[in-house]
Length: 343
Image (tube, rainbow, N blue to C red; front, side, top):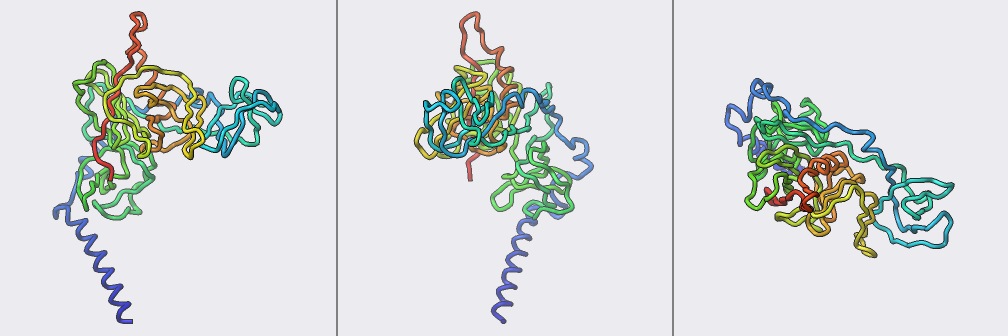
């Protein structure tokens, strides 16, 4: 019994010491800005893109779980067989027990999921004077901030939904990680937000319009000259299929295109009607992703995923960079880099 009490007392002391160490990073007067100073700039002065319902739902996207065959016509014995993978198709027409998913491409309707709803997240236009009083960030989780850096979430703090735009007013390091103040007595671990960090124009950039992709923060920023004009969350390549760092140029683009690869392999994927695609590094592209809502985290096969809304804006915005009359088909420069190292 004494041993049990001793273990409990030891654990309590260790917990108290950890809390004390976390809180000791602040001076006696406390950390961060007071509420009075925060209220002057409570929410980021950026303008989120408006959701275009017609654009977002102009296709009927479906997922296929498992093997499938593309038939040339309903009930036709002719077709192309595919193994199981990450498969999404677009239904254009339904006829009895069959669905048309392309030109002379039919599948049995019973292998299709319900309609897939694309993400409703959208990036934001930045102020024309490029002045942001504090660093802007998006929350990556539903959360309530901690009262102090390193502390537990406080039940009486305001609840913030994922993708909420916030300012980071102050930074305190606890145990080797940054904690950001996002409101009065509201602190979050660095892993729970993605920061918008504009950069100076690299010397290698040779186009007026260009895009930076920060692999660490998972944030893309569009620039006109030296001025950042738009920013959003992205999903770049996973560790197995990384998005390459460097300076590239968009060399071809499609309003809709098929993306498929890794046939007969565990990571096989088949994605129809990928919207607003701009290839910049061989088979790596900036493009819309209607099949997930995980923006702010790495999850692709190397490409830079954006929401349909953001990809459409970027596609339209970059149009003026091309000079078709003079045969200039070189698109905007894309600078891929990392502002930090993954833990």
